[in-house]
Length: 516
Image 1 (cartoon, one colour):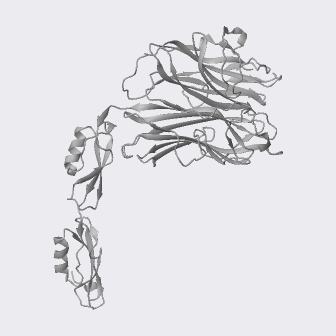
Image 2: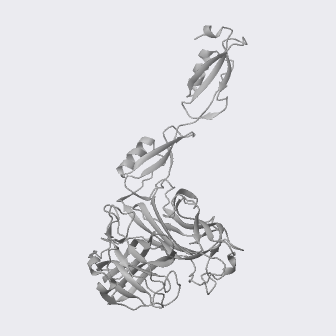
């Protein structure tokens, strides 16, 4: 037996609105929302623009116990049940991130449709929503949805809602599962920013794609004339050039990205793809690899450091199948990326979401988005100009600015210890404690020739050139004994001051009687 929370026992609040369903495109729908008041947890936010803080915080609200959702027969008006709700009051508009995770169990296993929806309301009117769904063939299913939105001042509420139907078949049970005690990776929960997400960013596909692709606008991967790989967020099929470039804040030390998307397999004859002829009779699946990539860029837009995450359902990057019976596949990505201070002073990032077709039926890209917040901030300072200083002077100046010196030594004509350049240009604003890479000269000199010199003279010549005598070996060839026969580096080479010069002398002695 399943513990149940029957809809008829819940306090109903009737709301009617026109919204866009990620699964059904522009189809109009009316939702009758049943709100489980026992699950409502009030949350009061400040409503003021937040000052610099150390960590982005959020309210985490787990489902306290199992909740049974009654299957609905397919009908134009979809009945959504509110599983979790959070109420908050803002004194001024703020940008907030809302994320959920829904885990459900279906018994018996059936090809039922299951939707996961975040819906946010104010004064009885829905102001934003985000959803994904799938036709479901397993025993348990878990996936998330995320949205970023600037909420108006006043009291609002955001709800995690779900719906299931399988045509006229109602002979199955769907249970929404709570997380185990102390767990956050499994189960059902709702999470919302507790502070204003200053500088947050969001990206969506460049074209709107409805469920049937009636306007022939959707992007397809695989199949006749379609690319094999696509950056979902790019307006161009060229995946080699970053299309979505943004600037992280000067105080950002860690950014956090969440992507939630849906893709659909285009099997032969399906009504969910404009080009159903792409699919082939007898092919039962589409094979896919998908990942979200966050690249920090150099000033010339080349990649300085890369962060990549595959879908949470397939985190190792393995190819996964979308069967014809599943048809719709929700994708969820989560990337935390450190902001490096050694990318030439650049805080530019590129956001890319790739879908790669590996075989089977083609893939249609449905709706979704990627949002990024600054999850860790720090107080900032301005990088001083230390180019031309000595390494000691540069270290002192950087310490005074609450930064650290990261020296890299190179061979150069400048006097030893001279700072030739710095990775973060003067005037760059960086978080305190950041390393600033400085390039320091080791000096430079020309290796003299000591060939045919005896050991004493060779040693003096090498040291007078500002170099050191390295290894001394002997060649028992009796050619001009006691003189240098070879040297490394060769005469005329440009090396740093203090570099060793290895020499080999001729001898006629046995190896055990070589001169010292």
